[in-house]
Length: 143
Image (cartoon, rainbow, N blue to C red; front, side):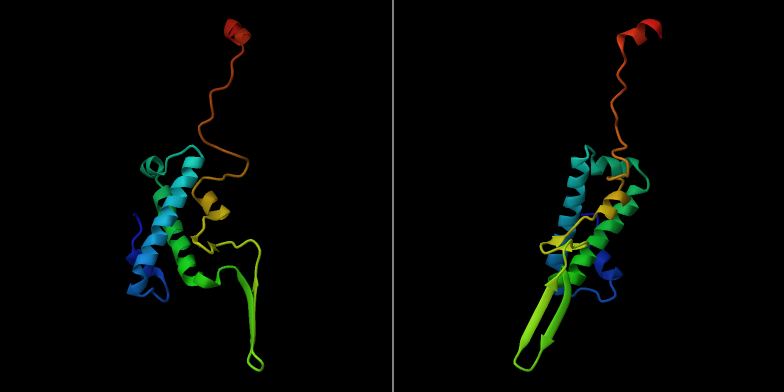
């Protein structure tokens, strides 16, 4: 793990208690695995890119922290748009929003804006490792 419980706790306005350490560490592992898998789906290696692309390490650490902090802070309120409650004759109501942006009910989520920040989803399509252009036989004869 690149990010630790302390990294998360030190950056939060209300740090998580020690009793949730195991959950936070699990969410960190989930976030790192989710990002690594996103790199694999693009035909890239997170580990190799962390070694060769200078800016990527900062973005990666920042995004893992953001993903975990969002999951901890929002927690059971993931996707809740509004809540209402009535005391007399007891009534409760919760409305969930479509298209949850930052967290999922299961924990962390990698958003499209985070993918762009990691260099995974660039506008206009992929920007990495194109095959060499096709050369027609006539071009070899005259070029």
